[in-house]
Each structure stands twice: as C-alpha cells, then as structure tokens.
Length: 143
Image (tube, rainbow, N blue to C red; front, side, top):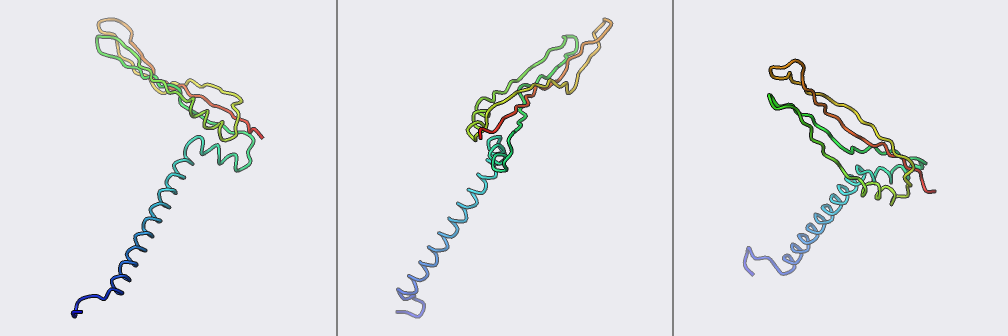
C-alpha cells in the first residue's frame, strides 16, 4: 500500500461511521416530523377534544365560524353584500370520534363593521354591514 492509501479496515471503519451518522440524522428527522405532526394535531378541534378528554373534563366547547358577510358600496351604483359559508361536518365528526357526543349548538350573529356612502343627488345614504355568524358547539363526554 502507498503512503496515502487507506487499508480495507480503515475504509470499512469510515464507511461504518458514515452509515451510523446517516441513520442518526434520519432518526432525528423522523422524530422532528412526528413532533411537528403531534403539535399540528393538538391545534385542531379533534386534538383539543383529545386533550380535554385526557384531562378528565366532562364537557367540551368548540366555537366555529359558519359564515362571513362583507358589505360593499359603489359610488353611483348602490350597495351589495357577499357571503362566504364554511362547512364543519367533518370537524364535528372528528370530535365525536374522540369520544364526545354533540349536546347543544348555539349561534351568534355579530356585526363587525359597516360601510356607508351618501346617495348621489339624493338625500340619505346607503349602508352595508360586515358580519360574522359563529356557532358555539357543546359536547358531552360519552363516559
């Protein structure tokens, strides 16, 4: 062997160190991914329901936005409103899958703002409201 050549044992030892380092990095990456998934799940309604059940609470409350209405006024044209709705059936199912039963739902309509504009060449004004419809949903523990 030459002066700068490695013996087969040294090459094998170096390859083994590299393999172990790669395995360690892969395991750290898997653990980090699992931690991120667990944190993301804990922020969901189902994750919050699981945490409440683990804490031993008998009731669980969830507030969900159902619709958002935004009012608009246009000069010389009038006023109009747009509404976007949100569906939450899968969210309720996921909470019930964690051992909760839907007990009651209440609804709140809250005006969050308004837009007004004077009528063109007429007395008065046009006004449109911005509002949000939310549901407060109460669950009871199955056990």
